[in-house]
Amino acid sequence: MYGYALQHYGRDYVLRHVGVEPTGEAFNSIVLDEVANRPFNPMVNAGAIAVARADAGRHGAKSALAPCSISFSDLAGRRLEIDEQVFQSENATGHRNRAIAYMMLNSGMIERDPIEALDLYFRQCSITVTLPRPRHDGGDARQ
Image 1 (cartoon, rainbow, N blue to C red):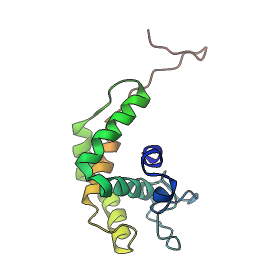
Image 2: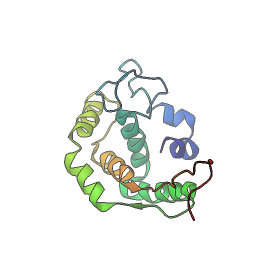
Image 3: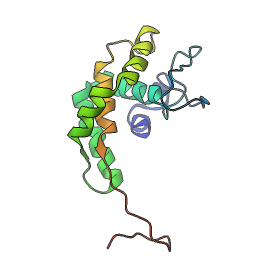
């Protein structure tokens, strides 16, 4: 999603929403860069939510999902789909991610209700991808 955002919105826009520095913390830690007023990087949940917020903020979550899905499918070389059961589970149990998003709202890192960003984030997390098993000689095991 970070690569998609960079490609479609540009570096300056994306860097206003998420940094590129390591946190030294777990991916789901509730730690934010309060000096720069953004998450540290896009590889932690707060950063991924911020990137989703930036995209949802431009298009709305429902509209933002379609071009992202097309882009991800293009990268995979086949159509990828959202596993609705996984999405429902993410949505039902994503309390820590909601805490992160609302903390970002409280500190002004995001300006609007984070529900749209969380919806987009949970849907992105629910995209089904199957990778081929590598062969021992380093080739592709698909037959």
